[in-house]
Image: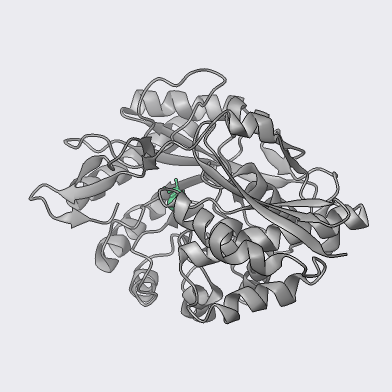
Length: 409
Ligand code: EZ4
Ligand code: CO
């Protein structure tokens, strides 16, 4: 069996998704997610202009060899564009292998280690009352773990807080990218944030009790000593994790944070390879890896990462906002079901429009996700429906301090 074609589909139902479809000579198709929020067309061009022709005529069964060929033959390694492109190929080939074997991907990865994947949802509010309502809505939907983000007094819109009333059934949660030719500007003040977050968690614990697992995303905003201070201040409120407390480039920053706090630490949604995690895992500076299958080169390298992490009792917390398409989400749900050191899965339900384009076998019920038992990834792309949502430019916001200095968003 040989690969006959590789096509790139860009569609924008509720947000932009880039999908690779590989078709074999005997008509089996595999899907891969290549979505890179705010830089989608760069990955589409990488695939269409440089990778598609390299795949034609190759054996789709040789997943690891194809991965190594794309990673090493490009010479210029790593980076989000390259690794999202390779990820899409890897996922599509796993999808084909599963369909040929008539097995869901998790069976090829060793079979289920659990009955379902515990998910956490994103609660947010500009006021405590709004936040409490949002937490209650998530509990009513079945979530058993909740990420808590709020506005900061004195600042305008900030990361993680739903922008306003959402259309019921369309999207109930926060999608940071906004359509238009320019990224929107948000104001930021880390001192105001550090004063406010412990107040919020104390109020949430008072209202919801000690047992509900709570998470928080610092979104790369703090210096190491600021992160250490926040981690320590949050210890009485027993967080499941504090995520991305410092910018991702400097792995040693986490050493300083770790020396000061027992709040569990999660990092790495923007990481592209195991090398970004090497020191963090080996020196036991974190508790959860936040890599997502789409930005980490696919299922094959993510499996290697979690196997390495397992030696140090570090668990998975795969990145799962809606800028991972249903194809990418399905792929990492199969992996999460099959690994021993699964931690938790971030989940924002795809909108009705997205689900109509990407018909998926995975389910969310009673707070738990399951990839389903359809062969391969269990996602079918409705191409006519996808064509009804052409590309519309969108960018993530960015942040400036009060004096105008650009800050990590
Ligand atoms: O802001 O994926 O934990 N989740 C996150 C996400 C990121 C988006 C950026 O595209 O931090 O919501
Ligand atoms: Co995050």
